[in-house]
Image (cartoon, helix red, strand yellow):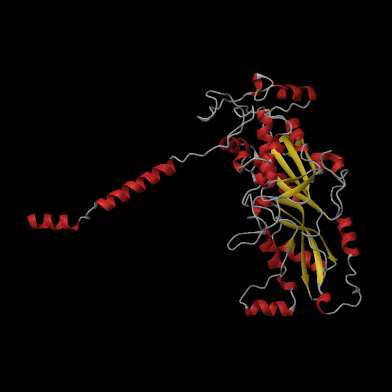
Length: 438
């Protein structure tokens, strides 16, 4: 019996002082991770005590009936609904596909080589493909291993149209038979598109636009749909040839929770005193601020749509660096594309979204942004920050002042991707009359 007990004791692990220190250190690290402190940006303006923290902004933006918006985009992709349902007859002329064709055809004669007599590299045939797709069905545009992406499906369907030389190269490199599609702008997971533009080229002469359309439409019915296909000059590039892009963000409004101060008088009331709301009915909840903010301060739980519109309008017609409104990119870099963007149009309005469960539809705020280019997640950060600043009662130049911030924590976390849609891409100079929201 004694011998057995000694053997049992010998088999037990011996804990040394070094191991004890290691265990203690790991425990401290785990406790520190559990009690992680998120440092908030130190705003210095008079609205700092009314401004939501990153967590509060995130919760406010996500606590919405997003499924209604997702369903609307899905029906729009399938042709069952259109932007006419949101904006009426003023939305009938926003797409300028015919103008794109004009510009592309003008470049048909390149470096003295005619369209009739082409040989060698000039014999390449380029197709411009206009697509619509439902963002909720995909993991974004860009092809990634193991993910269901729009580019992956499109290029797979284009594999049957590549020329023999390309097909042989892919076979020798043990790669799947796929085409190569360039795009006007890569969209994130959950972001839809109504007129995304991509291109595909081949040296085969027997490929017809109708064949490409059928191949793409068959790969994911109800999720991806070809709007148009046409042969264009080889000089056309969907990204580098584009003059502007238009995005639309639909933000659901709670019927009883968010007030829209539609009149100019009420907008003036809301900004008279920074951080105070127009009346007590607009305050839904009280949120205790962090330790570095005013103890017991009440933060607003509503915002003015017209105030968001005023904030966004300050960005129009200006070339500005939006590095503070970007994500997943370096804020300061010596290489790569610049962070300056030119916003042609930035507006917000309230309208009704068609819904089978609501006779009059559901109240939504629509934000329209048109610019020469957009940074990663820039639209979603702009929308979320505009809502946050409007709720806090910030001045009209609040977004402009945030351009000079020293840290991206100064802006709000990105709004949910469910509300974002790439409406169209323009290849001629932007016409201010060609807008969804005047």
